[in-house]
Image 1: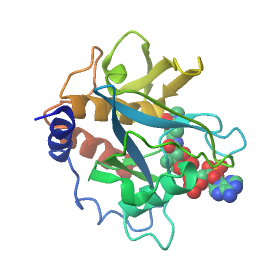
Image 2 (image 1 turned 135 degrees about the vertical axis):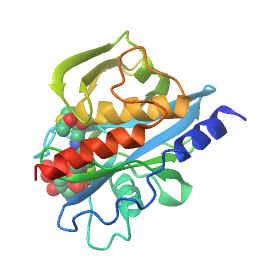
Image 3 (image 1 turned 30 degrees about the vertical axis):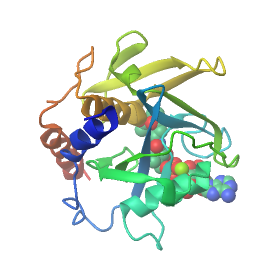
Image 4 (image 1 turned 180 degrees about the horizontal axis):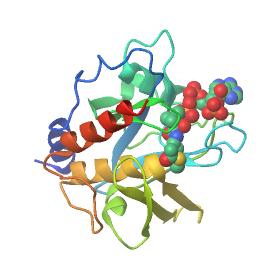
Length: 222
Ligand SMILES: Nc1ncnc2c1ncn2[C@@H]1O[C@H](COP(=O)(O)O)[C@@H](OP(=O)(O)O)[C@H]1O
Ligand SMILES: CC(=O)SCCNC(=O)CCNC(=O)[C@H](O)C(C)(C)COP(=O)(O)O
Ligand SMILES: [Mg+2]
């Protein structure tokens, strides 16, 4: 099996399917698309830098995504629609792999991560109202200790991860932390089938139970 097929098989084992579609309907929902691509024979992930003019998370690094709208048929539709709006990613060129476990953020938004492969040749067209920059980086970056640090503040699971990535194309230094870092670390570990050099905070063979525990704990506090 090649790299991509291996990643797909491994990610699919952790698909949440529709196990969470019966959560409290009143919860506001959002989706993020975690776009993977092959570049120079390696798996890469695509991230965006949010416009400094946004009300929430201004200037922060995140995956394409946003809040669910009434016309969306499901979480995947939300993720694809948002990615098309934010970076001009045509939905029909996207190979959706699976949905992962939803996470509840501090604002009470239930966020479903949707993992997908996009074409290696994709050229982003960022919508300047929402996105100031788009970059890709090797997924294995999120398994390495070199540019990683940890804050003893609880995040999605375990402590808050933070990475400093220097983009060799632009020289820009991006901080990737919090929710986005937690998702990147999870997808890197699952897709590459590799434990990170730092403490992951959950069992790589059974991330579902860790995610379910975190979600139930958060839901019980609502
Ligand atoms: N055309 C537009 N111009 C400026 N901001 C927009 C916009 N469309 C959406 N937004 C804002 O962009 C943010 C992300 O939206 P979405 O959920 O669709 O990704 C939201 O703001 P905040 O994140 O500041 O609340 C939303 O209000
Ligand atoms: C809660 C944290 O961890 S903040 C730390 C770093 N920032 C992030 O990880 C960005 C997290 N936010 C997002 O991904 C988006 O705002 C999201 C919650 C998906 C909503 O999308 P939208 O703001 O409408 O387009
Ligand atoms: Mg958005």
